[in-house]
Image (cartoon, rainbow, N blue to C red; front, side, top):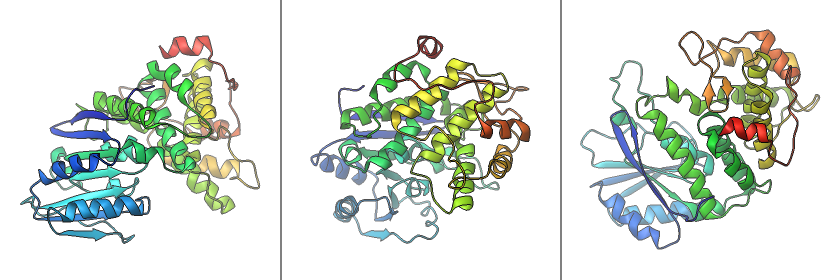
Length: 363
């Protein structure tokens, strides 16, 4: 899966257009310096979170400071507002998903999860602000594939859950390739990680071109996410123990498949595909049992709140179900409780091989 650790993409999201550049090796810092010099900054503001490696923070700061004065912000409080309209102050966001949620001109994600999603996402404007996507998008997203390859295994495994999400909901033709790539030890080459970034970037570009704020077809990019957030908060509240990185998101995907299967939307092959990819990734595929986990009814109640006006569910791999002209399917508490209690109508077996009927559905 992939032959090079480098990548060039441009992503069009409504009127916004920005570059995704994936590079490897220390020699790439010279190109990075040239790229950020093109922003014409009189001042840089470098915003970093806890996921920013100290070495990368020091290097980015040095590169920026060689061009213009650079202020570093690492405090855990709210990020600064976007700079003044003259464009002379350029904001660089460095780190994980939190840093990539900052309105910034340049984003440097240092985790796979951030690089696959938040770094490429347009920020929604305040309700009273004009809908101007170009002001909420970065001008450049810069990723070092070799640095991603050296990150801790649990962090990389969590990032691969994002890749699985894209394959299940948007590009199922990549099912077989991803299944043979995934490793429970989460050790990947820069070439493989660059290929995963290309997969996610291309899937996103296909959807956000005419849906930049992900309110229509691009809702698929967040498939299972709200359920995963409910699992994360409920298990932590019930047991006082946080799930492993990425496991809540993985369980959100499993629950989304169970709900769809219980409603008769998703067949056994589709439900099997969810379990198979996540198991190959070394992610959780079953809810924690009491007393370590959350009470089923408490979790079902949290999922009901998360479901809100409806959930994006799949009628097949890469085929979101449409209900009343919308991609959000109303789901009641009983369906969510059944999903928490077990697979429901569909048995979800695990096999280390690839099921022919699932591959047929995915293709």
